[in-house]
Length: 419
Ligand SMILES: CC(C)(COP(=O)(O)OP(=O)(O)OC[C@H]1O[C@@H](n2cnc3c(N)ncnc32)[C@H](O)[C@@H]1OP(=O)(O)O)[C@@H](O)C(=O)NCCC(=O)NCCS
Image (cartoon, rainbow, N blue to C red; front, side, top):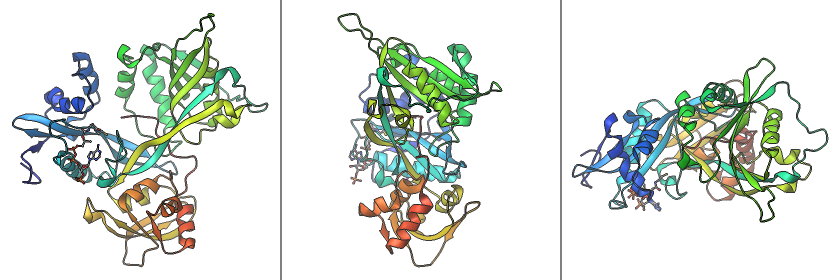
């Protein structure tokens, strides 16, 4: 037994051939049927066993958590290593006995040992991870466009050099990866996708389709033939009683190196024959497509919800690592109840070229919890908004305005990848 003698379970790293048993409590925690051979093989494909930690009681796995090794794009286009927390679950028979608490304690310690200053995750419930220091850093919008009325405004038709190519799935992984590698540096919040990511994605299993078509894949190439945008979608067929087509195009991925190329990709999916609607479940909250339409009301963001949660583990590395659009100084007092050694005062000195951050004894300008720092870190919410919500305390309105300027990011942060 490790970490605590209050509960009768031990924590241990699974061996590579223990995947099925290790992950079973998490499948069951999500009330999913036990996985098939194919399901196990797919879920194991990107698994990093030595980054996993499970809880065992009486020889049985009762809970676990995993992590992927990512680089996270930051404001200004730089990147930092980030642990992508995944596969978190505790068996229904062992919930609310502190298993998750211990998994999180151990996992965050491991992430720090690996020298990663940040951890990120997407959460099944927004109540779970704040206590462990994660803040809501990136929201996403569900975009729905009436494609029968989706003409672009005069003068807003995109005409970038290059061409569109529809790819057959066996040939798609290389060009998708090449396009994604360029796209992921455009917005803060994006993460790396390993080449194996595409291999798994392009298996395009029947059980992932929910009655829709197989996956379509297209890329945009620049004038030199280099991929600079990608879109993937499915079509869900539907007909009226009178035989009129009214299918929905379901967009999975859509990104490009410029907004103009993104508009070309939007046009492609908006013009898919036999469809009347395009739904994109994961879009940035400031997607400019609405502003390109002649009828902006035909594009609705019906839902805006939390998506990426971010945990700062090394405050100086994190704050020095991102870019800033203005120069300025700020003393931030951070309280970290889950990892008290992170608590303290930090002096951030920003410059548009290079910034520094170190511990200080100076009087704080702002005081906040570590999850608040995670929330403002990528610029997805302004410090003044968290102050208005009673979460951040500022010495004066002037320092709060300065903090807003320092942490501001444009475009809004976004992560297209679920994990
Ligand atoms: C969420 C889950 C992992 C929590 O595991 P657990 O072992 O029961 O959590 P713990 O007992 O360590 O609880 C830690 C604290 O978080 C709270 N908590 C944990 N999960 C919670 C939830 N879903 N809703 C509300 N509070 C929750 C507990 O009440 C406890 O609070 P306390 O310290 O103030 O008493 C588990 O319930 C589960 O597997 N749920 C279904 C799958 C899931 O949602 N996984 C998360 C994927 S992102």
